[in-house]
Image 1 (cartoon, rainbow, N blue to C red):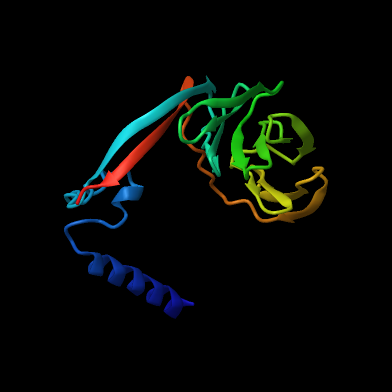
Image 2: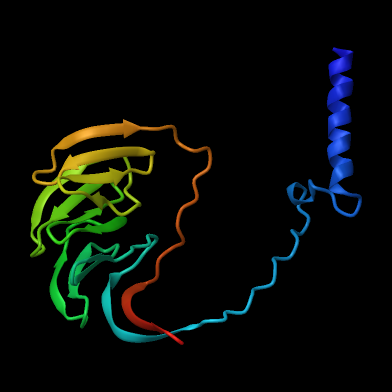
Length: 205
């Protein structure tokens, strides 16, 4: 036992010696300032961008929504239950609905379905005209955008479960349970008003 303790102490001492005398490798654990970041390198080939159109979606809250692009359409949602579809080229509104529930995750879209999720674990699927096709339930809050395949809607809940629903009727096809990480970091809070910006970019020769 004594030999094991001596060996462990020697290993720790060697690690500290290799780290150098100028800085303590455990400083960041003790509250010391971290080293400064490396300087940014200049961009040799910048990209010129310009706003083509922008559109207001709805009221934001503590969720961050990523618009989904499906063909020539852009579908977006807001925490207040608003879901809207826009023409990708012009930003012209195709349809807009206000669901009777708050939303926390979305949007998933493939041109046939639009799927969003709620803080209560409700999954809502809309058709290409914004009409509700089906509703399903997962075990906790939906934060990530649902993923749509040819015949499935894949939804991850906040408790690290992954659900697969039939795209036609919302019937659950399978469930995958994985161990939850010891620490989960949520996305930053959303804005009061959510807007979409369509940006055109062109490389500068």
